[in-house]
Every structure is written in C-alpha cells, then in structure tokens.
Length: 332
Image (cartoon, rainbow, N blue to C red; front, side):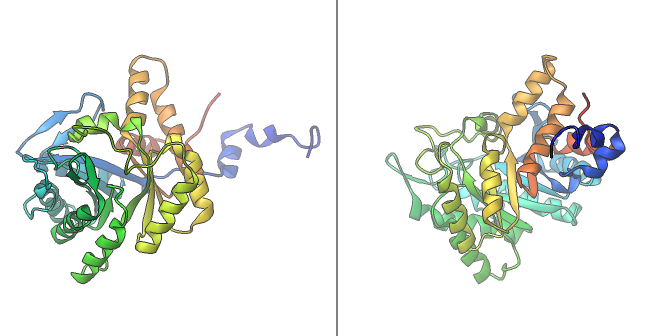
C-alpha cells in the first residue's frame, strides 16, 4: 500500500479512531506492586533513591497494600528486610520471619489480594549473596534446600504464589517438589527465569539492604549480552514446573520479552526495576520530562513487547492515571 491510496493518518485524526484501532491496552489488572517489609511498628522509612516508596512495618504495609487493592491492583510482591543476617540466611525460612509475618497479615486483612513472595537469600545472608558461600564460591546445590525451605515457609504463611529470584540452577524443581510433598500443589511458581546481572538494580539493593559484600553476581545472574541463553533458562524452568516466567529488568530487555513470547505460551511477567523507576522520577524532578506520560509510555512498551503482567514501582501512580482516563493517549 502506497500513498496516496493509503493514508495512515486517516485513522489518527481523532481520539475515537485512535482508541478503536489501538493494538495494545494497558490495564490495572496488569500490575504487581513490590513492597518492602521490615520489623517494628509504625515504621515508614523513605527510600531515598525510590521516591514514594518505603521500608514498611507490617501495619503500614497492610495500609499501603489496601490502597493499592482499592485502586484495582490485584497483587503485591513481598521483599523482606530482617533484623538478623547470618551465613545460612536462617531468617529467610524462619516461621516468624518478616515476609512470613507480612504474608499472614495481608491474607488476614485483605484476603482477595494476591500475595506473591520473593524467594531468595541475599537479604538474609551477612555476605549479601543469593546462595551459600564457600570461600569466594557460591555453592549452587547446597543452596537449593534452603530456597525450598524458604518457599515452603511462605506457603505455610499463606502466600498465594512464590517467586524464586536467586538464579541457582535447579531451584524451580526443588521448590515444586517440596511444595507438592507438603500439600501445596496449588501454589504456583513465578520464576525469575531470565534475570540479568544488571546495573539497574542499584536502588533496590539500597532499599532491601542486599548488595553483595564481595564480588558480584555474574556467576549466577545472566550476562546482558546473551539472548539465546534466555530461551534455555526459560525452557529449563518450565520443564521444572514454573507456572509463570519472568524477564528482569524489563526496558533494556524488551527484545528478550518479545523473543520469549514468540517461543512459549505460558504467562510472562516483566520486572520494571528500581533503576528504571528512579531515572524517570529523577528526570521528572528536574523538569526534563513529563513524568506521567513517560511512565505510561514505558509500561505500554513492556506490555506491547509481550508481557502479560508487570511488576512495577509505578503501579499505584499508573492505576490512578488509568482511572482518570479510559485509555492511554500520546498527544503531539
């Protein structure tokens, strides 16, 4: 089709036309809100690098989750900041751990909210790595049992879904087995299947106090240069029992989301991570961008690439924006 017979602008000339032919629709149903739980009462510690987000004691976390739920956000992802850390991450799988307490409180107060729990050890180890350390080496196989125990403790606390983010080989199968053996076969696994070793995680590591004390995570998180490897990781996790797979981060890896969408038919989650959020907020504060429009354009791009759900720190802001207009429109 060539001009003048074909004129694409005919269908762009008013908002009704644009709505009628819009290919990608963003909905509050797509959002999962990450929350940071910490011990104490009436605690609301601002996260300096993540404007509008806080480390929250359980009472304040319930309030924040209720606000999100009332806006239509269907799910939260819980991360814990424990009082005590040790080499074996014992706080991660303790029955009275911070995530376990937060999960129980959320399910009691807001039973219809979907509570997803992050399953990892980095916030709970005194060295900040996602697995058991032997010397300077992360012992993959020794870590699997602790990850499984953590997932089981979350399920016992009432978690609707568990989400292993550690990137140890074989952890999805280990978690699936222990859940099934303990009558939690109905609890799905959202696997951080294609999780890259990214510089975009900086603000999160400050918020969760989870930066490694030595080295980095390149021996277990994926090399940003790799694409085919993501397909292998996703395929392996699906074969081990993952119900939903995740790509993290989202924006620098839209091509990975798209490629995986072409390969699999399971639901895909994408994590619009802390660094992506912080950059938009910082530029908005400087007056360099229209923050709301950039937020909505960003989230729409992730959905357009093929994600079915988006973990995002923009969830509350975006839900409010969506409620004020029927569809996202880019003007100009």
